[in-house]
Amino acid sequence: MINDKKVLFSGMQATGNLTLGNYLGALKNWITLSDEYECFYSVVDMHSITVRQDPATLRKRARNLLTLYISAGLDPEKNCIYYQSHVSGHAELAWILNCFTYMGELNRMTQFKDKAAKHADNINAGLFTYPVLMAADILLYQTDVVPVGIDQMQHLELTRNIAERFNNIYGDVFTVPEAYIGKVGAKIMSLQDPTKKMSKSDENPNGSIYLMDDADTVMRKCKRAVTDSEGCIRYTDEQPGLKNLINIYCACSGKTADEAVKEFEGQGYGVFKEAVGESVNAILQPLQAKMKELEKEKGYIDKIIKENAEKAQYYANKTLRKVQKKVGFPERPRI
Ligand code: TRP
Image (cartoon, rainbow, N blue to C red; front, side, top):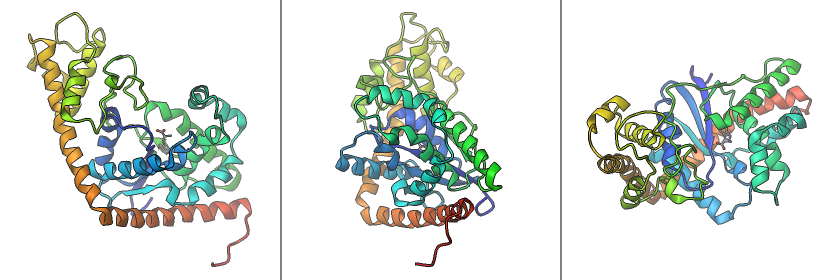
């Protein structure tokens, strides 16, 4: 607990271009949580170097992501928005937790298997221990809840196991975190293949709407979205492309699927697709404008970065000192 509130932690990587799926599925929901929880939202740049990155690009993308968090409506006075690499406790705790994690456990991680297959020329130890760093992120702040997508559930489960294992040996050191299952974020699928999740690493750029796509591009992608030959607007699993478009439309406009179906009853897909494009642009255009505005306020962003890193460091060190003591490291002299 911090300030009588439960603690929430989540993070995103600054690799790839964020998509509408990332926004509607995650970021948008984060905003509603900051009253109820003490929130830490990290730009997890240390995770990003498990695959090769161009340094200048990584730095730029990390800054963009941090700016995006704020542009999307996360108040940086209320939420701790910071770079993972600015708080040394992440790496320090990760090392200790490495010694409480088994090779066999890490070998079972499906994301490791996928990434190892994709980056066969660079299967580094960091890629293997990635979930331990993620456990450190979470446990460092005595986190109660973690909003994560289904693809990260296995990592969260591992985090819980590591925390319990540690607590069994040393007493109650870590809060054992739960997945945050609140109002589920819309699961947005690829516009070109509605059986696949919309992804920032999709090879076909027409499958994803990127948060920085201009209005014309958004409209073009919506119009080209794969549908079916039924020619009838319904919300059913038999028409997965259309269902996905309805989900997007509803997430952007705040309407329900029933309302959307009624609204476009008897109309062609073309008309509906145009409405989807407009609803997306109604979200993305103001978001992009806010990004541009904030990018100019360099001093303000720098101040946020510094203050929030200090805040994160403070809470991180509290946990870290406790853990270091438990495992038998000598007391630190004041330096
Ligand atoms: N591994 C997560 C992802 O790729 C990002 C992440 C890192 C994270 N540390 C975290 C998410 C801690 C939640 C909590 O999406």
